[in-house]
Structure formats: C-alpha cells, structure tokens
Length: 336
Image (cartoon, rainbow, N blue to C red; front, side, top):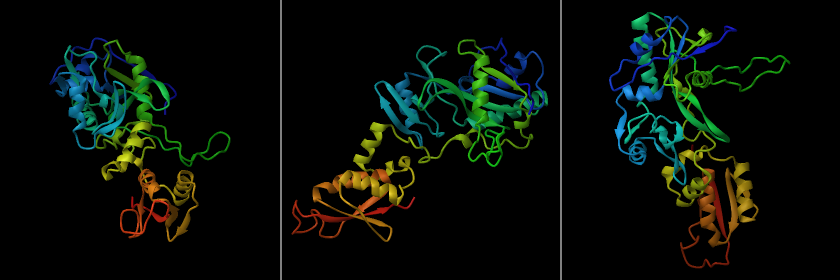
C-alpha cells in the first residue's frame, strides 16, 4: 500500500441522460489518463440516469414500486420517513429513492444491480483506456446510532471491498480478532469529500490503493459482500415495528428477528415476563402459567425464535381448565 493517497474529482462532466456512455464521459473529463491500479468512484445517481431508472411521479409512488420487489420491506416508519430494506439488501431511507438534482416531478430509483453496473463500467473503461481499474458505485446513507449521512459503496467491481485483519498483531502485540475495514465504504466517503454535494462532480478518482485492485478477469465479490443477510442484522426492524410484528405473529416476519435465542437468553426473558421459574427438559423450557398469560408467552416466543406448545387439555382445548388453573407451557427453539 502506498503512503500517498490522492483523491480527486474532475470538473466539466456533462449532463447524464438515459443511454449516456459514462466511461466515455469520465475519460473525456480527466486531466490525465487512467493508470493501472486506479479506483474510479461514481455516484449511483448518474448510473441510474444512464440506465433509465428515472420515474415520473412522487417518491411515495416510487417507494410502493420498490417495496413490491422480492426481498424489499419496510424496516421502520417515523412520521413521513420510511426506512426500507431494498431488493439489494440495503437499508436506506425511502429505499434509496432520490428526488434531488432531477427534473421536478421526477425521482430516481437505485440501479437494479449496482455490482453489475460497476462491472460494466470497469469493462468499458478498459476498452477505452487499457487500464486495469477498480470501480465503486456510491450512494448516500444514514448510519445507526449516528446523526448525519455519508457515502457508502452499493456496487463494486475489480476491488477488494473489505480487508481482513483477523490474526494480525497490532503495535502492542495484541492479536486482532474481527477487525475487517470496509475499504469500499471508506473509499466512497473519501470520494464524497472531493466531489461535494452540490459541485456537479459525479466521478472521483483514488490513487494510492492499487493493492486493492484485482486482475482484469476478476470482478471480486462486489459490494453485496458488505450487506448482511436477512436476519443477520441486530436491527432488522425498528423498535415499534418489532413489537408489532411479534404481536401479529406472521411466520413470514420471522427472518428479520434472526437466529433463535439461546436457551439461557430465552429462559431469562420468559422468567422476566411471566415472573415464574422455568425448567429445562430435553432442550425445551417448561413454565407453568395461567391460561390468560399464554398469548403473551406466544408473542415473546415469536420474538425469541421459539414456539409455545401446550398440552391437549390447554386453554380452549377441552373442559376442566379454568382461568385460575395453571397450564404447563413448553417452549421449543425453531430450526433456523
């Protein structure tokens, strides 16, 4: 890795419309030719424009279209703001739909496949210049626990998108366990500093990290490698939405809750909610509760990735069970 990192963003880039050759546009705007090992970053906005992802109408209508795609869903809603998981697995405000720097009454949807867009741009740049470059498609997103926004990589080609430092030793002799810098996101943030939000500079060029650029016949894992799978994020739903989904109990909503809780976690939660001691029996948890508590226990089990099983004579399943007679509820973890 070079000690000198240079980030620049060319001026004089013309307007992008559907069908625009982005590679030719960039090459024409550069002050000097591309070199092997350069990393080109391009905003998703111009990629979407070139790929015909503009829609006439408002953001709400476009959001409905995006939420109808396989894998897309609402994560949280607060007032007019909708946080959604896109078809790509990205979690973004309004599913990444952009209404800025476009004609009035028009919105832009994200590219259908940002990794494929990056790969196509990489091939075209090689055709025009002969250079072996990496390409990153960027977009602006908020971050959990943080105010403000920054650019992240939503598409990549010919690039290592993350470095694995696990097993390396720091300057104090400590072995690093899970450190994996998301260098594609770091590059996107650096590019945004050079581009500016209102500067009309959709491209950026990074020199000094040729070690991240892959051979021409290897497009790499793409930015999709940085996206956690459904259920892998600790915040698959907003706080209110998680409560609502657990109350509804639709099996289709289970995945965002992640893997089932451990027996220890489940036992602690059940005892906290029911104020009753749990017993363990062959991988199951047993708790004696009043029939009226069973619905609450079922909601809790859903959120934990467990299920409640009742004996045949349980509530509403036969005579002889009154509101003051406890039933033995058995909780079993669901198979992931």
